[in-house]
Each structure stands twice: as structure tokens, then as C-alpha cells.
Length: 151
Image (cartoon, rainbow, N blue to C red; front, side):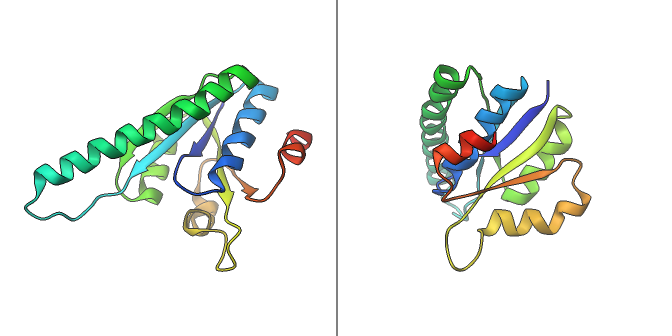
């Protein structure tokens, strides 16, 4: 089964990327893998603090995932898979794609900011020529109705 890999982060555009991935998976008999990345923090000798912050980040990720997963299961009949990785976002996305041969498409949401589509879209676009999968970039301001119409 082909999986749509979508990144779960704190961005607003993440919501449209999630919707698009779930709708496409539902309509094509595919799956959804949700990747969330905990970026490393520099805490020096405060290892206990870093461990606590890492655990809190995992709990936050799981809580957000459960909201999206419930919607995907209830509305789209798709049971998403959660993967949590730690490190640089671009490095971890590329590693996940290379480690899971079932991933067929990377889905990212584009920011509405005037400064550009967002760091992930910008960085992944630079690597797009060497990726083993296509990237789908979903506009952050696309309506639910339009997303449903194009998927």
C-alpha cells in the first residue's frame, strides 16, 4: 500500500496538508504516515531538563496526532500511522522516506506568509530533484471544499 507522508508541526498550513493526505489516501486506497520531528535543543549540562522537555514534546505530538487520527478514521476511513523522530527536520524527513519504501508521496503545506512558503517547503524543494518520491505542496489557504474537489 502506498503511503502519503505528511509532517505534523505547529504550523497552520499543516492542517491542509493533513486533509489533503487523508483525502488522497481515502480515494486511492492508500495510507497516511504522519511524521513529527522533535528538534534537538542545546541544554548543556541540564540533561534532566532536556529529557523532561523531550517527553513533554512527545506528549504534545501524540495529543495532536490523536485529533487528526480520529478525524481520518471517522471521516475518511484511513487509520494513520505516527512516527516521531528527533533531529534536523529535513534530514529526518529524508531518512524516513529512504527507510520506508511504502512512502509514495511527501505532502507539505505552504505557508501564507509573505516571506515565503515556509522553511520545510523551501528546503525540500531544493532537494526535490534527488528525492525518490514526488512532493505535493498544498496551499495553506485552500478551502476544505476546494481540497475535497481536487482530491
